[in-house]
Amino acid sequence: MKFKLLIGLFLLSLSNYSQNAITIGETETVHSEILEEDRILEIYLPEGYGESDKTYPVLYLLDSFYNFSHAVGTVEYLQLNRLIPDMIIIGIRNTNRNRDLSPDSPELSTEERERMGASGEAHNFMAFLEKELIPHIEKTYKAAPYRVIFGHSLGGLFNVYTFHKNPELFDAYITASPSLWYPNELISQEFENVFKTPSELSATFYMSLANENKGKMRGNVLKLSGEFNNYINTHDETDLRFKYEPMPEESHGTVGLPSIFSGLRFIFEPTQYEIPRTKEEIMVQGGPEAAIQNTVTYFDELTEKYKFEVTNENALTDLGYAFLRLEEYKEYSVNAFKANVEARPESYEAYSSLGMAYEENGELQKAKAHYEKALSLVMETDDPEWEFYKADLENLKRKMEAKANK
Image (cartoon, rainbow, N blue to C red; front, side, top):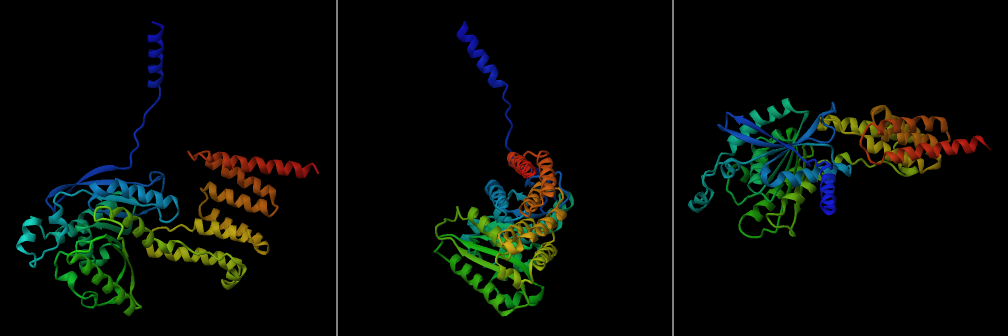
């Protein structure tokens, strides 16, 4: 009897623990008049989306059933490591993949037509994206007009076709092992015949290829890579960035995940600002105050180019620390961190860094005020490292007491 009672109490205690599901997104169904069908979307919104008033770049994900979960993990990991901005992800579930992702091709053999089944409607799917889906997303969500598309295999073929047909529809393309065995007159043409006004072409195109050595696919991928590089080298006036990355260690099935990882890093590589770290590098920029202004200006221009706010927070923070390491420029660290606080007065990290700069420069009362502000802000969040902010404040108070008692 006593044993049964203990078991009952144990089970009761377990029932008191709450269990909450870990979710990475939500689904939405939209109806397409163009496709004459409903389409299921898988949607990921970044942390803090609900409270934020900023807009986010959007990653449109083809073959969402296969790619949504690993794309979300990749985006969160890269953002956590300050390599890309926060993003919205819109995954598009397939209904008829071959039909939607392949362009019209009279050159298809009878055998290929039988294997593909319904095909050749990429122009229709592109119209759905341009006229229905993208306007819906940019109206419904906090979506910046900076659009990235990921496509793998036939999705990669669709990317190449879309870039040739309507390059401005997306700002950046991540194209993994595109099915360029598929014949199409448009994408077989030389760039000079397709993109006749280089100054109007502005896009970033990343392309990978797995360990695929048979048939026409590899040769056509290399040919396309050559077209990109020749065009960029010939036309200084074009705003076209391109990277081809062979991945011989990956199979056709595994190449998608590393392609999203490397592709996003390449697309947002310009956001990785290289601050001056030595006295010589700082003087080349015109001195410490000029270095601060150059950093602010660089990110202002980048924000205009990307069409969403590209934060200068990390760059200003790194610059502030660089000043702290140089005795003759130590006092300018305050100005770098102060610019950060002025740009984002809600950031506890910004106040903490400014407090630290004041402390290092011997202005302890100002340091205390900013440590208190940082602690107050972090306590309003669920950041598990709030104790570090509390420790900074307590250590400073002890320092001030010791100084007062001398």
